[in-house]
Amino acid sequence: MQKNIAGLLLFLMLGLLAVVQAICYFFPDISFEAIVFNLKFIKTLPKSNEVSEFLYKYSLPIMLYLLICVVVFRSFLTLKALYGINAILFFTAMGMLFCKFDVGNYIKRRHQTSSIYEENYYSFNKDATVFRRQDNVVVLFVESLENSYINTEIVSQNFLPQLTEIIGKEISVKEHYQVEGTGWSIAGFIALNCGIPLIMPIKGHIYGIDNPFLPNISCLTDIFAYRGYQQYFVIGSSAEFSGFKNFFQTHGSNQTQIIDENYFNKNEVGGWGIKDSVLFPKLKNIIKEAHRQDNPFFITAMTINTHFPPYLEESCEGNRYDFKDVLNCTDKQISSFIKWFQQSEIAQDTVLLVVGDHLAMKNSLYRPYLKPRHSQRRIFNVLITPERRQIRQERQITTFDWFPTILEASGADLPQHRLGLGVSIFDENQKTIIEEYGAHSLDEEIKKINKMYDSFL
Image (cartoon, rainbow, N blue to C red; front, side, top):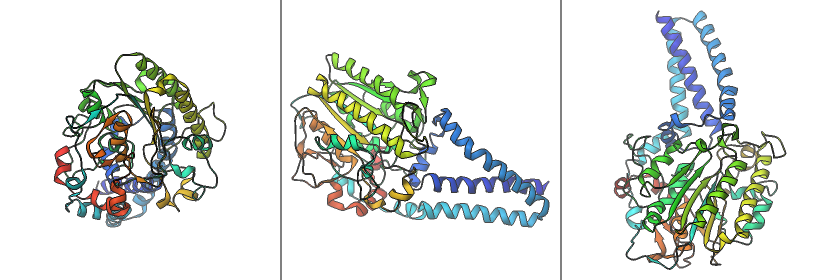
């Protein structure tokens, strides 16, 4: 009986070690906070054929291998030896987790305090804000899209030639950094909408499927709701994943129309959700219909094809496992959408921001190009506004800075041109927070606890 229990524990410990190794391999740059946060929404993971195929491809052979190991070990080892191996496997897995994700320093920093919010956070003041116009706004998050794919100092060639041509004629910031608490989809989304990072508190009950999402902070959705905007959220996967639905139920008077995978046919699913080739026609129709209405609109959309594991659509040429081919297809799809927007009358009173939600976590370009030059990696972005405006090209920004920038681009005059932790990129007289602190120091400050941040939760 005891040997059976030891054998079961051995299977579990081998499985734990395999899971830890898989996380380290497939998500080499993921933060500890991202893992903890997404575990709270594990039930909302996508269930597409490609995701299932990916899981079966790796999980079933590993489980079979582990089962064989357990049978062999149980047959030839003593009870004492089995418990000894269990202990070694457990501490090895925990050691890998602590070292890879710097859990010790995470805990340490979460007991250090910072005054970064008291010194740099600006709340929305409706009485002091002047709205000269109320232009429409469309924000398109492109999954894991980096400026790195354009930078030939990082990659072997420009993998986004059509988008490169577009950003040469529009507003784009080359030095768009990813900072702590913005490195996964919902975190990048929060950084842009609310001007703050997504930091996991030590208290584990804050975020979850049924909990309000940052209820004590004003975000773009709240401001646009106050100004009478129609609001839409278009995403190819489930809106419940990572808490997006929770966010919209908490912010924007709960009036945002959500269009997710449930609005599409099952045969239109590919990769982590609805194929981008299906999403874009739907998005265009929503934009055109919203533009016909009397009220201004705010539309947020998120693509999915470049999510890991990447998805190459049937209509695209190339190898489905070669990320270069996926990028080539994405380059054409995003460029086509932008050109459609530019050529339509909608562009006359609508702001369009196309931005990567975060840096890529894993693809076929990671080891040869991205990993060796990690410090040079930046997020893709292009801003198109009805008013032709100029910015200082050598600026350094973070996703926080889009919060005030979007409002000012749509016609608002913000006091101090600041909101959240962000500074409008149109204000050339103030430093952004990353220009003020530097990337490393800013990351360190964000990781520390802060009373003002805790009051947002």
